[in-house]
Every structure is written in C-alpha cells, then in structure tokens.
Amino acid sequence: MIEKVSHIGIAVKNLEESIKIYENLGLKLEAIEVVESQKVKVAFIPVGKEVRIELLEATSPDSPIAKFIEKKGQGVHHIAFATENLQERLLELAETDMRLIDKTPRPGAHGADIAFLHPKSTGGVLVELCQEKH
Ligand code: ZN
Image (cartoon, rainbow, N blue to C red; front, side, top):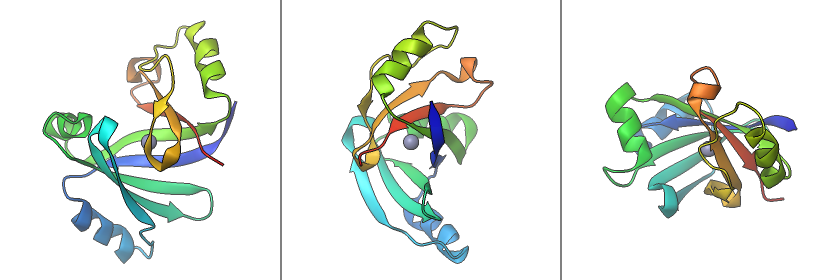
C-alpha cells in the first residue's frame, strides 16, 4: 500500500531562515506555495528524485503549525507516505484500530490529496498518506 516516503514535513518559525539552513547543506529550494486550507506556507526542497523536505510556516496564529510550535517548538511535524487509491486505503484503515484524523482525502500542497493518521495510533508520529498528482 505504501510506495515510498513522499516528504518530511518540518514546522518552522521563519521560512526564509530555515530555507537557508537547507541551502547551506547543499539542497535547493524548488518552490514556495501557500495552502490556504491548512493555513501554511510551504517550501519544497527536493532531496534526490523522490523525497522532499517540506518546510511549514504558519500563516495565521490558529494554524495547526502555529499550535504545534507553541507546544513542541520547531522540528519534525509529520512523515508523508505516498500511496495510490487514498480513499480506498482510508476505508480499509477505518476497519482496523487505526484512528484517522481525516476519513476522506483533502487537498494538500503540491496538488496532492492527503489524509492524516492520529499520532495516538502510530506511536507518536503524525503520519500523512499522500496521493500525489502524476
Ligand atoms: Zn505533508
């Protein structure tokens, strides 16, 4: 069901400053996108051909990212796994003990459909399932 890691989402206070850190590591910024529905500004930084870092900066104080940073500080926010047939996967997972944050896919960054699994069901890791646009 899971094909690969799509991206690692990292909560940051200041996008520009964090982009510099990754550029200093030799990586390159690909694009920046505002995802209104999630109140985040996202910087895409590819790592090789398949995986990317997504730096997430809150665009409003009630953004989930703002709340995350308030509670835990900056750092890794979620790991996203790429999957096909996301809606089907969610229906399958709903039959198990897995707690779903999203029972149906919603639009995420990069034109993908995404759904989050609850960290209480995944050993404390916020897991995103991500059906990427081809
Ligand atoms: Zn993500």
